[in-house]
Image (cartoon, rainbow, N blue to C red; front, top):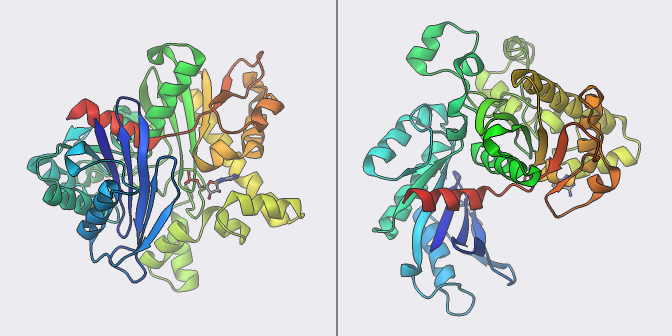
Length: 396
Ligand code: AMP
């Protein structure tokens, strides 16, 4: 069956068409600047060239119509007609406490997702627009919602409660939810496979280090703690997000710079992290280029970033009373051997040793720790779309 995986943002829509039997990606692409000037569709069929079409897209419905017409285009399309799309899987950012797994989309499910909107006001409304647009166009095609938060619903109260008045939890559901669940689930499962051990008997720490970044402790197949919180701002230092810090800093900066809370929140989300510290940018390729030229701020940023990742790994090793595998994934985790090496240098006491030759390899899932290393360290390419397609197939 062909499964269309949709990831809708407020002005963008990413898609992949995946054949569920072979798990091959038949086509993929994205619509950018939906509802804005200069909108465009990028479409790439399997084994083919990228096509870029500039086209006005007033809304997400127009965007989806354009995607579907590309998929059936007689020249570069990959299916004959829309009847060849068997199901649609939607990535949904926040499922609150309502969703501990993927679900088939019904009117009640849409309503329940809507009730989670205030937990993710930037993301969930956009995800819902995508669902509604698809339902309008592909009326009878079954659709499944796959949540970024669902995998972490197994966390115990000791991991998800904040040190706040308890009524903020009961009244407003203020607690740790965690994100990147699809990736943490996929990668931790793959790690156990690569290790040749049962998923249900393995302790894994997944370091999803992308532009957004989070760490997850997966014990015996379930998430027991993760670094992102009520929102994706908490935890690691990220490309442009601050990660965890003293909450009193917000008031302090508001007063010093005469800014509103909203303005400071914008700085914490978009102008902090790697970009904020380095003053160079949020992309580690630029940081490494500057480090090689001797730029001290680039070096300092690298130190702070790796130390931060190492602290979480240490904390989650304690949380699980041990660790069998540390798995690096996402843009930085998959492509940056220096960060992996520097992070692992903190764990001599765990008997971790990195095999430098393995660590420099690219393009495959591999073990980068030396054979004698007590804890295995791996690089595993995440594939959130494939995981969404699998979840969709399992829930229609
Ligand atoms: P993601 O959000 O998973 O797509 O990750 C994006 C980030 O990955 C970029 O901002 C870069 O910092 C990092 N990245 C991607 N490719 C490379 C690379 N070849 N070397 C170092 N960092 C990379």
